[in-house]
Image 1 (cartoon, rainbow, N blue to C red):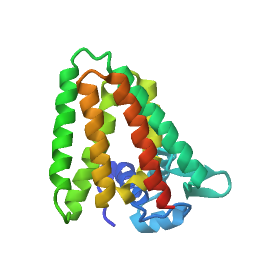
Image 2 (image 1 turned 90 degrees about the horizontal axis):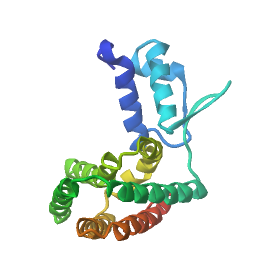
Image 3 (image 1 turned 30 degrees about the vertical axis):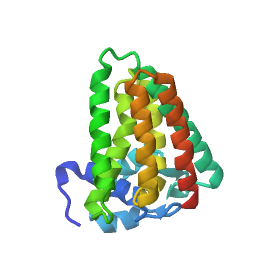
Length: 219
């Protein structure tokens, strides 16, 4: 595989991250320097840098004298992950209330809901349309972190969301979960933009609990 040498570690990181999130590299699989060097045709240095970033993302675990393995999540892990992610997303909504121009948030939320609704109405989605829907769906959650003015909350959520994405990328390709997710996003949007901030936050927590059920089915 030919890579741009000026950004080797970044490219390797992005490729491996995508492969893990989309299950091209399955959970629990061991990643060895030798195999990765063969795949990318590079020295060990950019690979080690990429693996370090994946460890920081919470997508791989490093075990001394053993190597690097892609994370493997049990039912208990997944339940805890979605429950805690629901708490963090709920807090992000509550903290964003302090932002002085809520209309800016509502404008972007409206755009997201409009775009996902248009895509969702099609009976058969092309792969690029599914990817676009997932991007908008993720953005709905991430938007509140952009305006919550709490970097620690944002950083805590970033790591967990990477793990959550391994499962959401599976069920968010299906029509029924898409419709349910979009319906709940719409309810959150209306509550938030009508000034019912705490209700919107509680709805977000409930939304993650529903999504957890879809994720558990993927196990």
